[in-house]
Amino acid sequence: MRQKPGTRKSHGEKLVKGIRRATRKQYSAEEKIRIVLDGLKGEDSIAELCRREGIAQSLYYSWSKEFLEAGKKRLAGDTARAATSSEVKDLRREARDLKEVVAEQALELRLLKKSMIADGDDDE
Image (cartoon, rainbow, N blue to C red; front, side, top):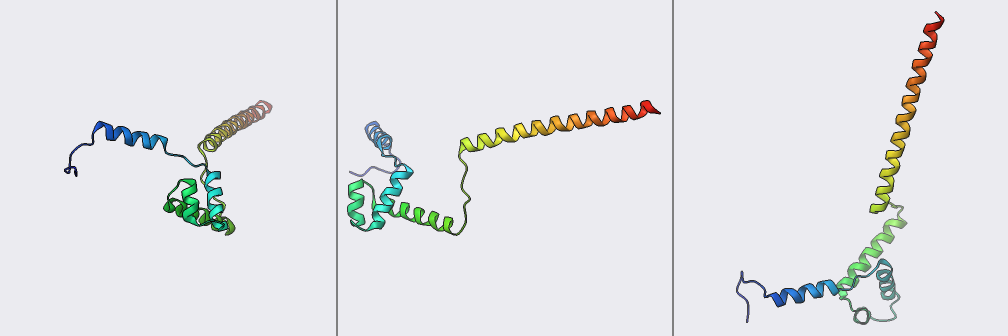
């Protein structure tokens, strides 16, 4: 029987949906590449490959499109990529350290200039 619009899902349905979501397989980049390359080899049909790997054909085709687009960009010379959070943290830390060095150098330069001016005043 169909549920009426606005009716809530039962606790059991929510529980099952949560379990399915939590147990869904997460594919690493290496696994995605392996699957796409297997499909590009053409030894098996895409349908058979997807059945064997337990993925939907639409997912395979979206991975394949992303893979080929990335290769096309790379071959065209576009090597820009998104930085990882650890890289961003490292770069921010390095920038902060460099700013501190510049501030110290500027302070030393100012002190040296003042001492040179003061030394020049003493001679007169």
